Amino acid sequence: MPLVAHSELPTFSRLKQEGQTVLPSDYALKQDIRAMHIGLLNMMPDAALAATERQFCRLVGESNQIAQFYIHPFTLDALERGPQGRAHVARYYEPLEKIQEQGLDALIITGANVTQPDLSLEPFWEPLAQVIDWAYGNVTSTLCSCLATHAVMQFRYGQTRSPLPSKCWGVYPHRVVDRTHPLVAGVNTRFDVPHSRFNHISRQQFESAGLKVLVESEEAGVHLAVSEDEFRIVFFQGHPEYDIISLLKEYKREVARYARGERKDYPPFVDNYFCPRSQAILEEYRDRLDRALKRGTTPPDFPEQLICEHLDNTWHDTAEAVINNWMGNVYQYTHIDRKKPFRDEVDPDDPLGRVKP
Image 1 (cartoon, one colour):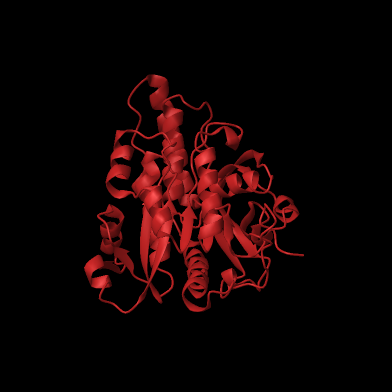
Image 2: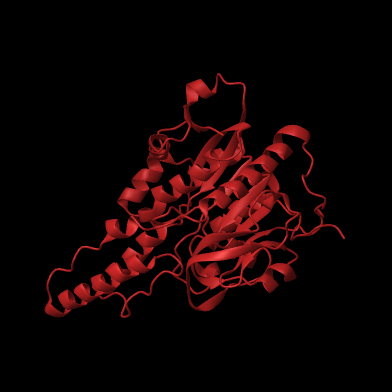
């Protein structure tokens, strides 16, 4: 359960202030508890870099109580960063070469902002593919979040994501469709997950690639799926790691873009997220903002604090349970019997790593 503060990464002190157990590295070394080393490939832009660290570290730290977790953040040089982001990475992140040399028990790969219609045209495409190929042969399990899921589906399985008619943006009800899989053991059969994306991979695409869908939504589509061996790669299309205010921050940024003239339409409400009272406050704010823009005066302050008071988190407990199951099964494989935790065997002669017939 405890995170180990083995570096000066500010996320550790922030989570400790929140009340989470974070052990100093010298103290952790004295404990007779197994250590697990989790890589975090953080591809998010500078503005979301630290928040994404906290979100995934929080989920890992709240999970299984049978190990001490060492989080190893790293990124890709191909990702464009400003001075602040480069400084943060240089001070707190680890080189990929060092991580590959020392090894990992599990790997988490975050989403990323994209600028190209085809993911293969992104500057991070080749470096990301190399990391995932390395992880497939050297890491027990890799968890892919949103954009990372779309990238793996394209270069490993030949399944290209499709644009949605409008942004999938909100908190949506989901249903467990395979209740026997260990990743959803003890999880509510229905629960919410936040989504924020313009593209998607359909259930048909997952299944035609030989993958297994575990959780989906009538509105938002597939959220959770797994690779052919049912564990080596875990796919998220949603964002169960999100904080309660994450979607509010995104909405605020879109409103700011509208105010600067960077988008012509006013952003719609985030689905199933704002209560009626919050919507009324936001509608009143829009009227005030439009009047200010028309007059050429300073826009009013966004009523963030008023909205925060009425937000509900309806997804974190389930996200914690899924990550707990994931960490428990990684631990079982890497520290107990060294056997695959599931029944299928991967065919070593298959270039796509498919299971044996």
